[in-house]
Length: 256
Image 1 (cartoon, rainbow, N blue to C red):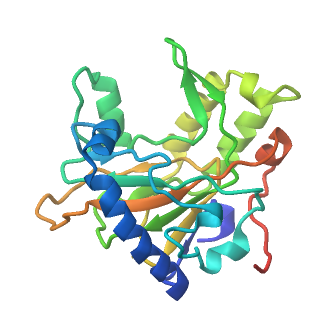
Image 2 (cartoon, rainbow, N blue to C red; image 1 turned 90 degrees about the vertical axis):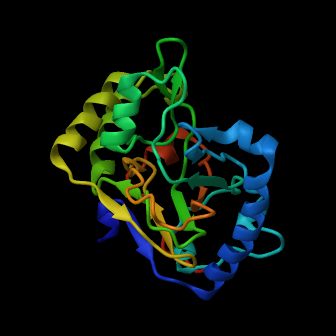
């Protein structure tokens, strides 16, 4: 695995492990709140989507604990960080919600709901527009559970990125309908690249290129003891402009 594949998995780091333990304690409180659960549970109660649900402060600080780890040397610079997404997968994933159509369910089950973050579906026809320009996606596991890992398609960011740059051209990303370009590129990725799981324990991490196709594998073993589910905190801070977002380069070696 190299940065050319569009991802990197980091081993356990003491500072990251301290952060993960602190974040887990906070995550348990968040996930137990009935109102929050009602707002976030999807797919028959098997996925807690948790966008911005983890109350992290500037640069990922949670309850006074700073975010530390080797990955900080590799991150493309951003002005500030978003609040963390708290993504929790439970046994039985992917379930079905009332009204779930067969195609959407099959895509979750057979294709891990593979997607590129930030290309949001707009309007009744669900046309795709790049409305969120992420710098990178940083995943920080909070539990030891290895069921339903994040999957990624190595090297897919080259294919997706080329398609998006061609579709947007000299235009503005947020105003460009990229539906056809994205769908065609995603189909090419599916036909030519085998997905790999991104598995790391608490204290480890994985870093993804913003255009890397990724998703969530089904939960395979319902006998696994997982009272907290498979918890991962995701950071997806945004860049300042289209030019930065469309750059093929996505990491920067620097000391912090």
